[in-house]
Amino acid sequence: MAPTERPLVVAANRLPLARAEDGSWTTSPGGLVRALLPTVQETKGSWVGWTGERDGQAEVVHADGIDLYPVPITSDEVDRYYEGFSNGTLWPLYHDAIRESNYRSDEWDSYVDVNQRFAIQIANIAPPHAAVWVHDYHLQLVPGLLRELRNDVRIGWFNHIPFPPLELFQRLPWRSEIIKGLLGADVLGFQRRQGAHNFMSAAQNLLDATELDEGLVHYEGRNVNVGAYPISIDVEDFELQASGRATRQRTAQIRSRLGDPEVILLGVDRLDYTKGIGNRLQAFGELLDQGRLDPERHVLVQVATPTREGVEQYQDERREIEQIVGEINGRHSRLGFPVIHYLYQSLPLDELIPLYRAGDVMLVTPFRDGMNLVAKEYVAAHVDGDGVLVLSEFTGAADELGEALLVNPHDDHALQNTIVRAVEMHRHERRPRMEAMRKRLETSTVSDWAKSFLDVLIDS
Ligand code: F6P
Image (tube, rainbow, N blue to C red; front, top):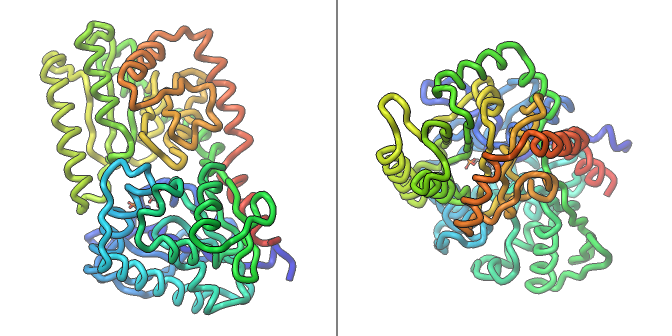
């Protein structure tokens, strides 16, 4: 069969559309959906995933040019598989264990059940010889389970978050089961070379897999390709939207609403403890305390998108951040002019893009992040060739955006000094840095990412 004839089936925890409380469909949050939807639409593929509802229905929906196959998840499974094992065990462990993980066998059992349900649903709907592309840490058992059900399909898996080093990964009581599940794939993709390397090392140490060649692992009679495929965004679409008249007008309006400050600093994140929002705000507050920044000339806008609100660690993080915002605003705001504008909201793209354009300094300071598409979105939105990106060394994006001001977010002094450096940077330095990042981004878009992965998957 010619590679181009292979129909594409995507499986991810979430469908690209989620059912709202009033029964209507809205676009799901998160970079994964934004990155992948155009590719699936182009290939007229199918998407298997969860609607975001507790005890939802399973009927097929045709929307946005693709077939959506919902996998029903019970309320108990939302607690155990999604909030529990995926986001209370795997998420913190895979992000350098910056929060303590829970290791509960009832949550693991639920994870196994839901992975099985996904595998069965994919096996039922995948056309013969399809290319099945499974996504993320929620579905690490699917490759192995699906292989047992359908040997005619090609199976790829891509991890949108970091894959941890062996010394952390081996804490997981079910570490061998996870590696075995992943080795059911033909191709395993990671954001960074380090992630691919960490997986290889886990496969060799925990199972008797052997590395045949760089990026090729042999296990139980089969070869699996393992490599790095850094994800990106739809750069052209961002540029187009960013250069429109409506965006320019809204950008000017935002600046004026904020009191036309000299410098607008901006943070845009899901409200997640991996993102380093608190440290960044503290650094900004310290700089105001020391008089190195001036509340009349410098303001910070922090968009914190609500996420995983049922998970305790996220509730704690929100409380902490809101306390910091309150303290800094209490000390430094003037009547009618808060120094931090804090939005606990999910903004639509037509509001986010003008905000990116209004941001003179973008602060992306996670403690660990698989890629961080916000950094790329900021660069793509700056069609004016201006703006400074402060970027954590611990993001995948730092591999590609070397002209950003790279910083260690654990180092308070470095963070403060880097923010000051960004605020004071002369346009003669700003513009070439931004130009270089924009050029690189234009040659590495989300369709390049999808194509490079699918080429290997189809040919393997
Ligand atoms: O990038 C990791 C990820 O889990 C994506 O799968 C998702 O798009 C995003 O974070 C948001 O998370 P959630 O689906 O838990 O709201």
